Image 1: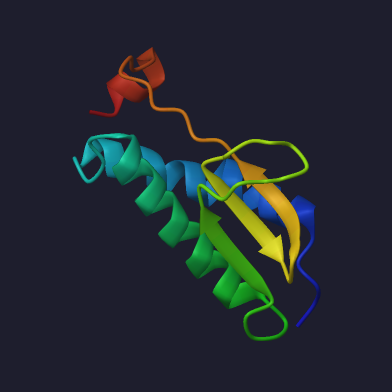
Image 2: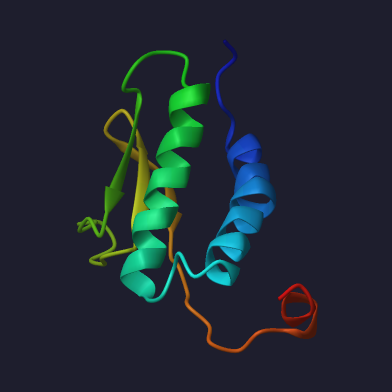
Length: 103
């Protein structure tokens, strides 16, 4: 299997991940930011498990402390022991016209 690139991960986040998050909100699977983080963690973990070239190469951690930055991002994807992608999730109670039309 080919090495997963950050561009492929970004395409997943902007495409299938975003669509599944919108469906989760519409179907009332996500009610608060904690639900959002849990749902996002599972979707990302499943995507990486299917794409990783060796077992347990990627880890997804919820609210880890990053010493170099001094912050607690929502989710961090590690490739081995190195932070590979930092994800900050934002919950919005206002639906855009595009999202509201799909309800």
